[in-house]
Length: 182
Image 1 (cartoon, rainbow, N blue to C red):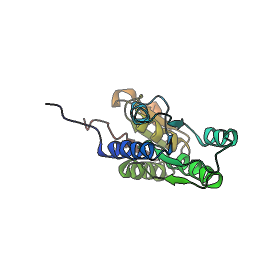
Image 2 (image 1 turned 180 degrees about the horizontal axis):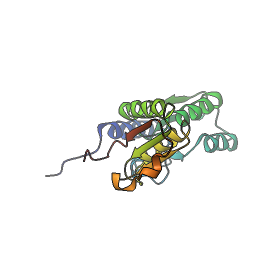
Image 3 (image 1 turned 180 degrees about the vertical axis):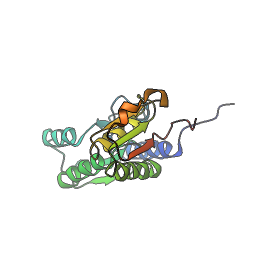
Image 4 (image 1 turned 90 degrees about the vertical axis):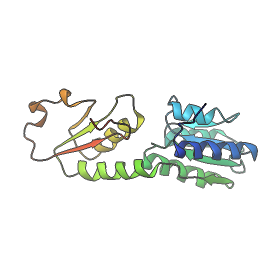
């Protein structure tokens, strides 16, 4: 018996990409080029374009002569940073007349990113727990660094020391979505 353990949010993106492909639309995926989620979604399309940042989107739009009328469907990796997605949207909306944009950032991820940013802005040290290879954890750390000068990305409590909290009045804590409770 084969059981799919694919996250329903990722499955939704795959279906959107597949439908776009059947409609003859170019699929634009905003995310980390080598991430398994992004690679899996892109594999359902003949010519999906993957962009890791808004600058790459802008450069592609500038170099693509038929961009104005090209039928495009844009989706994002579920853990994509909101700011990156929105800046990429602005570029495509400005350049394209036939673009469909789907906000596919996972709600739980979006909520956690917003909460982490709020906490990081109020503390002296921010601790982000999660696998170093996890896109979700990495993005949380990036977001926290925008709001806090001391961000510690760790996989376990044994990586922390008292020195990490020297001169610290308040510390914050967040964790990547796939971080075990223990």
